[in-house]
Image (cartoon, rainbow, N blue to C red; front, top):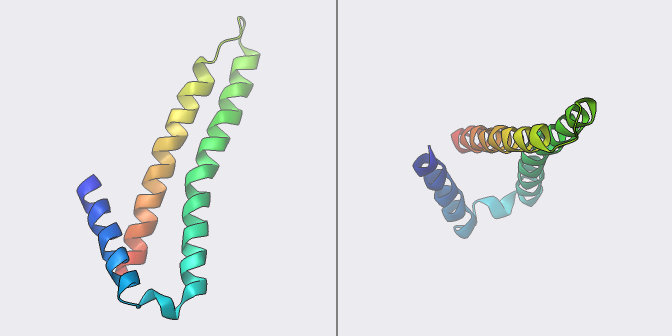
Length: 90
């Protein structure tokens, strides 16, 4: 999975260096913004859900918060991977 992601990123970098993406700066900016959102939103949602669950349980701990943050990172990373793979197919 990571080898494929590295190859996709290298291909996008070559396209950028070749000037292919310079013709569409707004599209590149939108892609970067979308990548940020699809990664950050699951992490933040996991943090809030975990914090809410931790506050509901007796004996306040960070067990749920940390677990859901890690789950959000995994979901966010897979979202970025699939979005880059879809953008690469275009």
